[in-house]
Length: 260
Image (cartoon, rainbow, N blue to C red; front, side, top):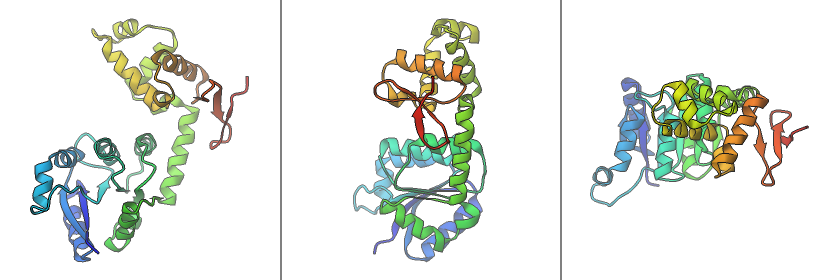
C-alpha cells in the first residue's frame, strides 16, 4: 500500500514538525506540503509546477487528503480553506482537527457544504498518528466521521441560530438585512451606510442569502430578497418547498410547514 500523500496545514511550527515526523514514521503517510495558513495551502494547490515537482517527475498528482487545523495563521480558518480548495478540486478528502470551541467555526462548517469525505475531531482526543491515520484512510475511502462532542456543538449552534438568524451574519450584514426588511432599495441602503457603489450592497445581499440557505433555493434575486425580509420579520430561519410552502423547524431537527 502506498503511503497517503497529505497536504498538512498547522500554524504551530513545533506541532507541525512533530506531527509530520510522527505520521511519516509510520511509513503509511507522506507529507507532500506543510504550511501554516490556508492561503499558502491554496497557493500551492493551484501551482501545478510545484505539485509536479513534489512527485519527482511522475506527473501531476493532487494530495490524497488534506489535514488541517481549524485555527490557522492568515485570514482564513481551516474550514474556509478547505471550502475554497473544494471549489477548485471537488470532493477532495479533508480531515479537520481543533481544540478551539468557537461558534463561528461550527457555523463555517455548516455553511461549507462538506458532507462527505471528511472527518472533524477534537485535537485533544485524536491528535496522535495512530488515531489520525484511520481517519485519513476513511476520508480517502469516502467515509465521513464527526466527533460526537463536535456534533453536539454543531447542533447546539444550529439551534441557537435558528432562533436568531441574524447571529449567522456579520455585523454589517445584520444592518443590511434589517434595512432590506424595511423595504429599502440597494441605493438607499448604500447611502445610509456611506457606500457610493450600490454593488457593495448587492454583494452583501448575496452573502446574506448564502448564510440563510436562500441562494440554493432560488436563483431569482427578488424572491431571495423577499424571503430574507420574511426571515427578519419572523425572527427565525425559514425554508421553502419547491411549491413555495414555507417551513420551520419545530423540534430543531425536522422541517414542518409553518403554522399560519
